[in-house]
Image 1 (cartoon, helix red, strand yellow):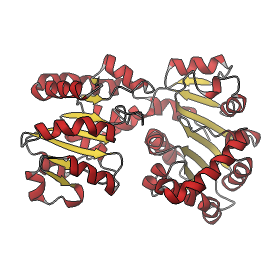
Image 2 (tube, rainbow, N blue to C red):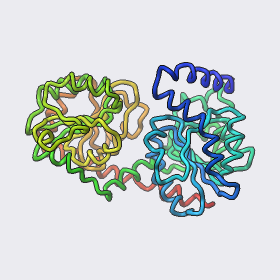
Image 3 (spheres, helix red, strand yellow):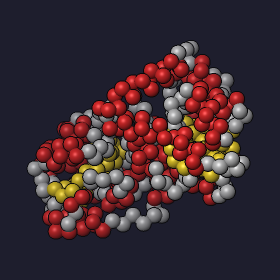
Image 4 (tube, rainbow, N blue to C red):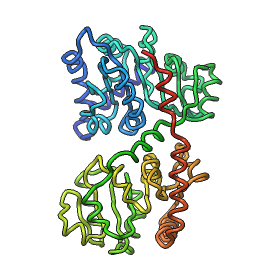
Length: 408
């Protein structure tokens, strides 16, 4: 049934690819994977294989990847993505020698891929656990671990019909989980090679503090105003945010909108919805930046630096059900963070609402009330922001624990 499902997925993706740019990128990219590996790999190469579902998992695994690249410079690093949103943005990363799409998870593809790569060590990040690839790794006695794993009781691994997926989990020689609940779930299915290491994203974002986060055009735009940064927003987020922006944006209160989707259609929708004066990143002339009260970021790769200019941050994804984006990125800069109310699958959000400086809102009225509170009270901003920054510091350290385990 699993293999049949993969073949049906392949057919479905190819069928709708002509009508969906993102899916077409994945379909076309997967066609090139084996050719690329044959061209770039030699029989003498000693490989490490890192796999990430998408961009978020890449950012999660990156601090571990960087340590291994430094520790094992003689190895060739192969990085695979399943999603175009990961591959297209990080296909030129300097942490890997070869970046390709992961072929669909058939037995034939798994054997062919491993015949070419022959990894001495494999790391999967968080999830995207493909059974045929992992079982074939185990059959070939190749080492693999899972890092920053997060499990829920309703996942297929813990159901009576999830035998093959459970077998895939047992292909990992060790699993580093984020919390006790995940460890308990694994123990119930008699998987015992487990460590609670936490979330490597804490290490990743903490490292951002040592980077140069200066962006001259953001400094010009912000000036001396209070600045609200809206990161990775979706239409559901913008639906409640833009009315507030239209009412309150001014020379003293400015907003930066960095939407998750930067298609021309979406950017134009945001522009058409705004009454306030705005400027696009793609048209960031100094005179426009200083006079505008809204800055629309119609590009990618800048958000982690932009958060350093925030007095207040709103992180998107949880007002709808697309999935909450990274709340740790703004939190590390010591700013209060506002999110939507669908955050139940994100334990860091629940914990930071209870113990740090994250606030959840359910509707436009609650959003307005919370923004008003933070805008009017610098004391509240500092109190909530300090809680966030301290929470990040207290929870980093997963990378050291994981990399100490790895010996190749």
